[in-house]
Image 1: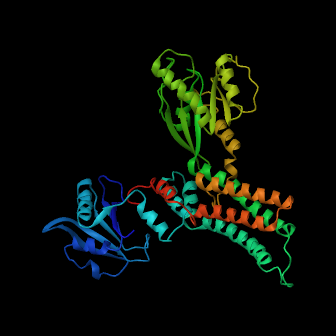
Image 2: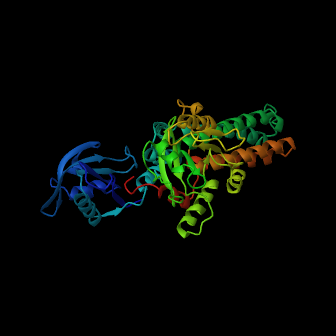
Image 3: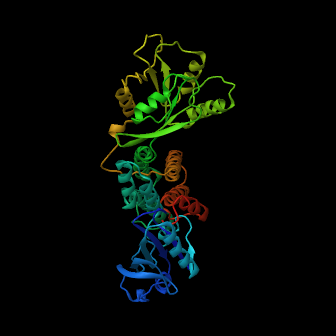
Length: 448
């Protein structure tokens, strides 16, 4: 990290201002060489300075330049931010000048990666930054803020500290068995501490599954045969005419998507092609996608016609749904009842008359416990990587507890505990590999 990086930090386009960010040991000197005053190197840290960016004798733009000196910066390096007039041409011109005068174009997420590598933040906080950028509801924003302020990291650090205490007692007994004043530590004596740690892990995992709902939302697919009212249902949920509605079968050939918020949780809704046997190549691709979405979705809204009996195809789909979260939505309840079906997850609506939509939303709230998701303490893990590592740690701890029941020697228990401690360290980035970092930070934009 000896080189100096630069990138555009604001969305590229027409706007009031754009920000070009520079980080590295030579950042102040490089930007200073492009200013009209040539006095940027004299400025105090954390100041905003009026100047011009120059290309030789040519004025490029009138700017405000923020100077932040290491180590009290986001990356713990010297950082300069050039606040220029918004616009693609000017912004790119200034970036090009920086690259021609000693800067390297930053990789995606490299500013945040440097903050991590320099000890400014840990991995859960880095993930929180990405979550904050991507948040689309107030709950997901609050969740990201909790990650940024270190509350999530502290939970994992506390678990590691609990494990270290148990390990320390084991080490004393192994290394100094000759001392009479040291209490002889048996497997049975460490068992309560390990069970307490396991309980804390399990509680974090339970809460973190709610955290995933808050961050990612609920992937919801509307499926059914043609002309049962899938597109009409989507339009009613979204309160807009997103999908084309006609009486012609096969109108929806590809997926149509939209989003709504229920109790602060995002529903990512997908209207799919009507499931039927068809010789139309384009429609058949859409039908195939619809069937694939049954396995990929968190929630299936299976729409049936109230005025028609179940078809053999619909019975097949019902069998597929038994292991999924699903709601059977019986549409066209303003028409004659012909459908006979017994299930606990039924909501009756009329998409045409806009009836029953609120009942459907209430059913979704009930199914996912949305009203009970904690709104005050958002200290959850929200990343699949973090959650899988914690699940591994919990599984390994369960094995340790089982081994204690089977009288495994205490020195072997100590080695297994160290593995759990290391796994927890991977969550916050105490240990990592470069491939993991590259993958994680590649999701960020260039200027973050």
